[in-house]
Image (tube, rainbow, N blue to C red; front, side, top):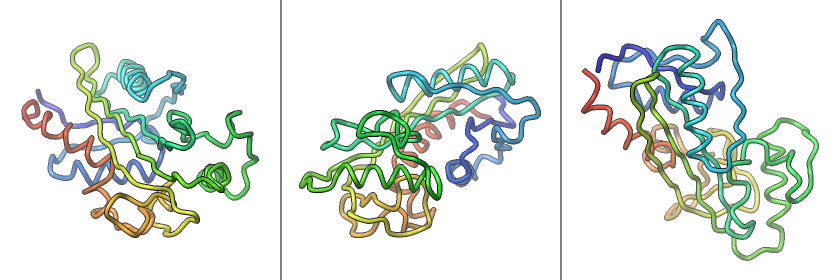
Length: 207
């Protein structure tokens, strides 16, 4: 299978930066949704990470006629019955735990809400989940998943990551993902694990 470019179906600069780093060895041109002239919006309205990722990959791939990598990822917290889960990116706006108004930015508002809901709770275990789908329009598709287990800090620390990184402490570490350098983070992160599995599969297909 000859592939010279792949669309990463995201506008999240932090996520795109991580994907580009992970795909360095292939010499494939990596595009984001911001690089595309025509714009479409695919709503993430499914109930699972996999269903959301498949929907995004297929709709963007069929529209742009280009191989697509789409991911859905999020944070699941035990004490909150798995929330924020698939609502991680817009946790501030859903009814669970009450809606929060955006203050400085969405990421910080999501973090503020999560920490508020965990006040007084002893169980702070959680895990990041990433499901990555690779789709070649009307031809082929594969998917992989990755996990990063850890706990929720009581206050944010670090400014190197995005999303919930500043309050997530991976197992066997004492610092948050927000304090990790990108290369260090990719070695243990949920996205890093899922993409590495995907790359191993793609190595057998890309020439």
